[in-house]
Image (cartoon, rainbow, N blue to C red; front, top):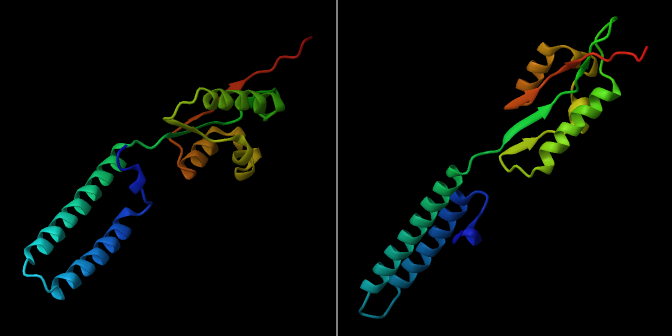
Length: 156
């Protein structure tokens, strides 16, 4: 963009501060000027004010038009066994593969959450319950998540 060099995290406060400083300098020059053409100072002040105003509006419009990426994750798949559901290394590996696939496609509209911090943040034993996964996804403010089940059959 044209105004990438003006990108400041909080443009509003900094822009107002810069505008006030420039306004004080122009006002000082206007008050203590010995020239008879003070109209030029008024024009300069109005031009500088208009420039700051339009740059401020342009930055606000540009920031609001950029959509935030969708937060997504794949919870470890639940291994349905005869005794009780569990999370095995296969389910962790499968979930990790899906997350890596989402990352490697360089989809800028997606922000996949990693299992590296997701598993320690959640209660691992409770991840076998879909209701807990739904509550945890709401707590960490996910837009989309995947919960799956699989049945591992023994090679008898």
